[in-house]
Image (cartoon, rainbow, N blue to C red; front, top):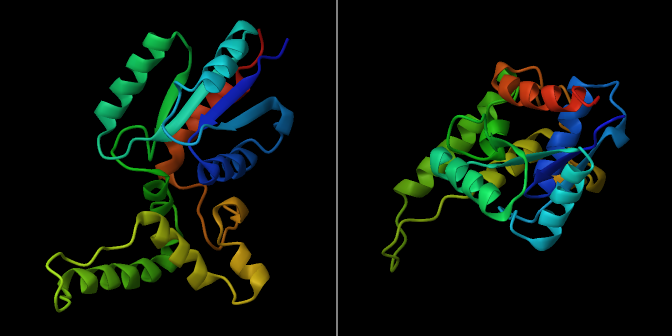
Length: 206
């Protein structure tokens, strides 16, 4: 009997990346071998999420939670483990970017762009530095630098064409992370995530 694997992620960007990455590392795995559930944020206390997790556990399934570590990896991990105990659910945990450091999916993506495309980020870094050094008359606070999501958006916008169909590929839900001209899914930086996913997705037999 095959165990069901449910992967819980925060948003559509995470879902699309995980979908594409699984297709790359486990090309022979059937799409019905797992299900990716978007929780809408760092949210496992939601009744629907709890019910889905418990039903899957009761059916001998495996729950995987892949969330962002954000600004404090240790604190986020401890909080999720505490919540897991308090609400009585079972899951294995991985925190972006690499299950060791602070950060998000966007930090992971920064680490898997192609080396030949790094000048794009160098341009962006210069833009951010310019904002930090710029003062505006009548404004006391420094200018706000764009979020990391905007940096990834700009990276793809620089590489893709100007047509509507090309612009559509920039959107989180439409991105193709298997595009070898944009992303290196064989990067060493992805080894922790690869191990986490393959262990649980391949070990599905009772």
